[in-house]
Image (cartoon, helix red, strand yellow):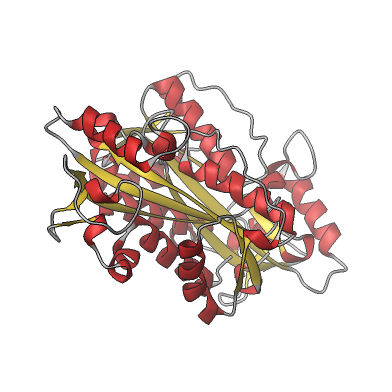
Length: 203
Length: 203
């Protein structure tokens, strides 16, 4: 498998239209056709692992098995210093089911209210498998550091963005133009690194 | 978990003295003390996974649980194009138990003898966990491309090195001075990338 350079088509294990658009934008110049999971019967898969990378790998494998194609999946979350990296892999369901950004944010603000260290980072890992049993998935990750504030600011973004403050920019993630956020965010960095790996075509 | 910069001590999940020396050499300048697994009761762990990264993660977790420290493990193997990436994660036990470099090499040469494409690459992935449940292990990998020849050359190295020919250098892995091999090999590249991640201290 000298591999990466040979990928001509891949499926994205995500139903998110924004992610799909962003990934297409980056992989199109590499001659890689990016298909949405909706083109195949890809069901949701369990994410039972304690690491982001194992969850992403499970999703990528499942999508590859269902589609017969190479597949790309990501997993991401927010990790607070005072919570020893939590909510981490549980970020999307921090306040329980059904998933709710509003309740998740409320819970995070509540548990950090009396903490002096409110630093946190978003983390994203992307995993690309060439086939379901690929022994050597391409793994690319990125982190985005900021701090949690107690009152929301901004209308953009999603997830914890309105409470995720970037001291250098004086803004929250929800106050950034999407183009800027896509460039500097955890996901932006992971995608840039993934593109680099694919360009190198090293393996 | 801004994490990486805070690692002061870690255990290497390997009994290999050469690896230990090499890793110490790289991490010492970062103020990270590297301990051998022999300082703890670390037993061998199963490596049942089909990916290098999952096997390395299993070893790192196990070493961290046994020692109570951050732990670094690697997994590596050789992947032949004509074998669709095999023997891959099975490289060390390709010709069965007990493990034997000689029988492994014989088997690889036998199966590739009538193939025209004898390109292969070594691959190494290093995984560092800060604790056994670390949601965000540091993952660093590297590949080393060459081709398999049918007659061995050189006395150095180990594993498949005497049959792993580097066209650019006109030598096999077993003919290279150790210092050069450590710099350009799959493991050298993975370690360089790991050091980079630790220096960035990004997460």
